[in-house]
Length: 146
Length: 181
Image (cartoon, rainbow over all chains, first blue to last red; front, side, top):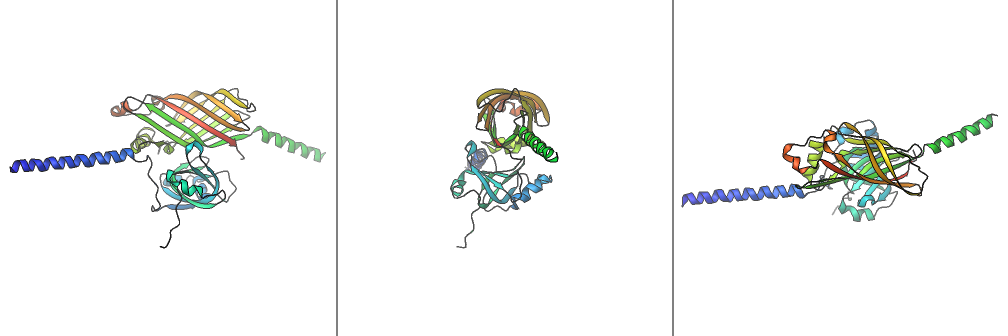
């Protein structure tokens, strides 16, 4: 009887481990391919001119895959390639911009924006081509004191 | 006499400026597909940069390898860390020429683009058949071509060899607008 109880316990633990590992495996396979950006994450902050200047000086290495908050003026909002994108410009007269590929859950927030608005956008810094590229972006909502 | 010379300089300057007219695509799309019996892998990059010099017919394309979006996190991880090594080779580039290109033709023309594609530290000359649509000075370039993994010195571990196709289908679409630089 004692032997069968031990065997039962071992079988139960094995089953539990199997369930947990299958669950973890499924989770890693079904989540978005990039890490998700959320309001609560701490970030490095820049304005458009600062982040462009920083990358022109070839100092971007330490920012790649980091979450950054960039403040700028909306030059364009588009849905090219079925993706919501906000393009920010700085105050300096340059052709370099910050391209923000928005998360799908940001559509409502984007609808309230207008060209020329000054906003901050949080996203994953991917690097620089002619422009700075941010993916998985969100528009942080102002905190209320309720 | 001096005034005439100045006028000539201004006209020349104008002509030179016109001759180096460029168009830019800031949000070009490049996607690739790998089909095998084990799994299909698809990824797309929607922030590919490209500039065309309309007079010269030259084209340059620049993309960040870590900006490809996959369906699964594990695919993205393998792509960046094991295959493409995007920390060592962050960009892929193409520099080439659109053969027999006339930027003034409105509507659709199909042309060959010949140039050098550089990825994972390997440069390879390629030719791509491309559809070019010119609609009131905005240009849309699109096409599809096949490329081989082994051409770019990408090592696939034997265990995963069945998951990755030897030949990868690449699709591209670029919408160009006037470049004011």
